[in-house]
Amino acid sequence: MSLSNFFRFFVPKERKFYPLFQQQAECFMKAAPLLRKMLTETNLANLEVLKRDIKNYETRGDEVLRELYTTLFATVLTPFERDDVHELAELLDTFMDRLDDAANIILTRRFTEVDSDLVTMTDNIVFAAEDLNIIIQNIEHIGTDRVKEIRRLCQEIKTIEHDNDELYGNYISKLFSQNYSLSEIIKRKDLVQVLENTTNSAKYVSDKVRSIISKQ
Image (cartoon, rainbow, N blue to C red; front, side, top):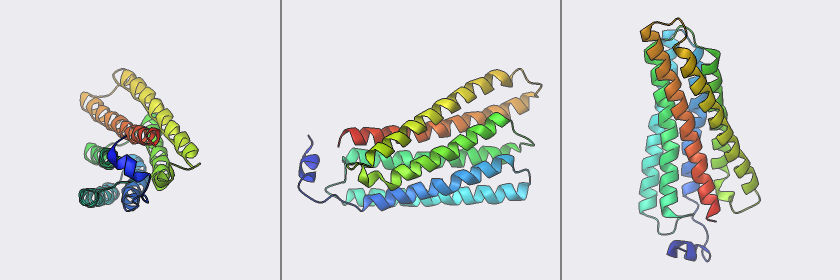
C-alpha cells in the first residue's frame, strides 16, 4: 500500500478534484450531440457554427485540465492514487479531443450524404458520452453501493466500443466494393477511422475507472 493510500484511511477524502472531473465531463457531454448534428447537416454555415461550438468545448476542457494539473501539484493527499488522478484527467481530455477531431473531419471533407453505419457509430459515441458523464458525476462515490451502477456503465461502454469496432471493420470491408471515387473512399475512411478512435477513447476512460475501483 502506498503512503498516500495509508493516510487516506485516516483523513477526509480530498474533494476538490471531483468538480474538475465533472467540468471535463460536461464539455464532452455537450459536444457529442453537436457532433451527431454535424454528421447529417449539409449547410456549410450551420456546420461551421456547430464546429465552432465543439471547439469551444474542447478549449474549455483544456482550461479545466490545466486547472486540474495546478491543483494536483499543490495537493499532498489525493482522493485516489496521484497517478490515477493524472491519467483519468488526461483520458477525459483525450476523449474531448477526439470529438473535436471528428468534427474537423466532417467539416473539412464536405460530405453530401452519410451511410447509416456512420450514423449508428456517432449515435453510439453520444451514448458513450452520456454513460461517461454519469460515471464521472458519481466517481466520488466509488466506495459506496453506487459502484455497482458505475461498473454496469463501464461494461456498457465496453459493449458500445465492441459494436463500433464491428461497424468499423464491416464498413472498411464494404467501402472498396462501393462505386465511390478514390477521393470519396479516402474521405469516408478518414471519418470512420476517427469515429472508431473516439469510441476507443471512451473505453479507455471506463477502463481507467475500473482500475481505480479495483484499488479501493
